[in-house]
Length: 313
Image 1 (cartoon, rainbow, N blue to C red):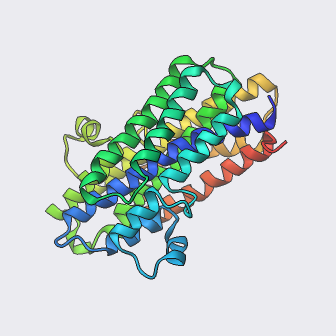
Image 2: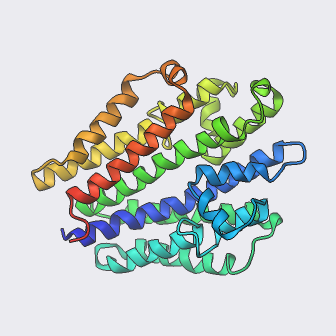
């Protein structure tokens, strides 16, 4: 496969996943803000930090407000990671590799872009936000469903899936970091009703509220929630699940092409770390420090995949 085709598929699915993930991050910020008495704008400062967009936001705004932060993350064209920017980039990549996609996948992607252009053509009102977030999640799910149900399981499929799970792992780590490191008001509130409401909001934002209850009987303990979102290999947005899929898809590429790259060793090492560690060790290390290191290693893997498979040739 040409490197630019692999690149187009990989980034098409990273951008579609990122669009949904940014919407989920906005949802997490909105839900956490609603649990505060008065729900201040400082909550959105934390959300922007976890999205990696705080410095760029302040280049365009004097201070952080909820309305500006939501607008910046959903529809601001100057933000390359806004939902609208991601959908446009994703569609552009899909158009570039149109002949490598099934008709169903292309149509689902194009319809996603058309609907979002209409919904995000103007500033979003607070009352409209939950509905728009649901549309984004629904449309992203339709693209994945069309792709999963119609694509041949070959190298095209593997590059697309790797892009999806690298992006998803990054997002889960960032959303968990929003709660634990940035948005919790004070250590004295750990275990309080406010703390529990915020944890519940985070679980809902990654569609993990009900499945968490099946495993832990809905008892909101920080260590259990961190364990569920980091180390539980059955939870489809956990870091462990994402790396199980990344390693598997990289393995198929190794078999197809008859060669391994540095990315294979890095992915194996990250997967092994997630398999061997325990949540007690993670907490002893410091959850924020663990997540920060993971995000950096995940980004390193993305660059190694780009280099190893010569995406720009």
